Figure: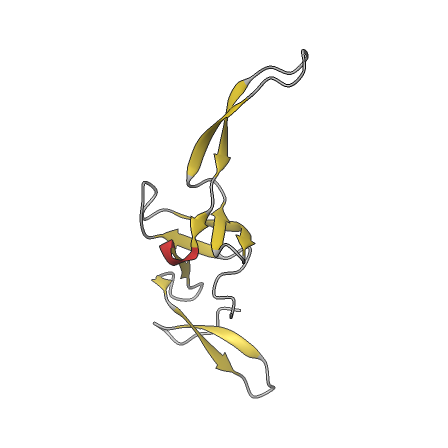
Length: 105
C-alpha cells in the first residue's frame, strides 16, 4: 500500500467534531490505517492512582483518526486535495496533488 499520508504532513479533517480544522500528522499507524493529528481529536481518559505519590486524574490525549477522514493539504495551492502518484524521469515515485498536479514531496 502506498503511503498517501506521511508524518509531518499538514492535513484537514473531513468529519467529526473537528471538521475543517488543520493540523500536522504526529504519527501514522499503518496496520490500523489511522493517523494521529497534533492538537486535534482530543479524547479524555481517566487515569487511575497507581502509587501513593501519584494521584488520579482526567488526562486529555490525541485519539487516532481513520485515514479516510483526513485529506492532505497541498503546499502549493493550499487546498485539501486527493493524492496521486507519478514517476519522475530519474525513477523516483512522488506524491502529486490531484488539483494542481504539483509534487507534494
